[in-house]
Every structure is written in C-alpha cells, then in structure tokens.
Image 1 (cartoon, rainbow, N blue to C red):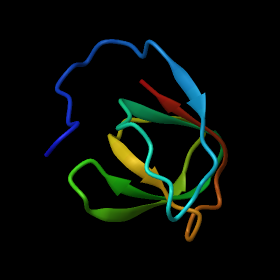
Image 2 (image 1 turned 90 degrees about the horizontal axis):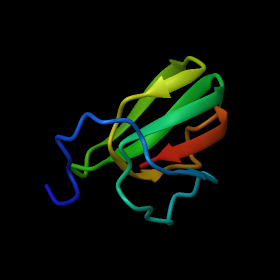
Image 3 (image 1 turned 135 degrees about the vertical axis):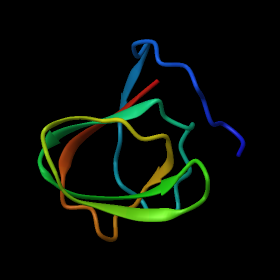
Amino acid sequence: MSGRSHDISAAYDAVAVTPSDSTVIRTTRSLYVGVSGDVAVTMASGATVTYKSAPIGILPVQVSKVLSTGTAATNLLALY
C-alpha cells in the first residue's frame, strides 16, 4: 500500500482539489470539506468509496483521487 502513512501529526500543507476521474494526486493525510455533500474517492489502498453527506470539516482519509463522478461536496482541500 504505497503512500500510506501512520503519521498522526497535523497537516503541513493544503492544496485545493478539483475533483477528476483521471487525475491522481499525492496521497493525502486527510481532506477538508468546505461545503457538505457526497465525496467519492480512490483510497490509498486502491479501493473506491463514496462518503455520503460528508459534513463540513476534516475527513480523515488517505486518498489518491477525488472523483468527479459521485462528488457533490465543494471547496475541497487536500491536506498533507
């Protein structure tokens, strides 16, 4: 499971994420959701899941993609 981290320290960087079904991003420490809604992702493990009605705030998941298909949440930040 390449890119997987067991580090629990605070994020050191944040980058705006535009959901895309094809763009692979650097594996995140977590995601920040600015406007709630569904968030479809490819996990660091390769599994694809949708977090239904993700609330505003930190979503503590390590992902390599934030998918446009199935994502309704906006103002997303990848936290590193």
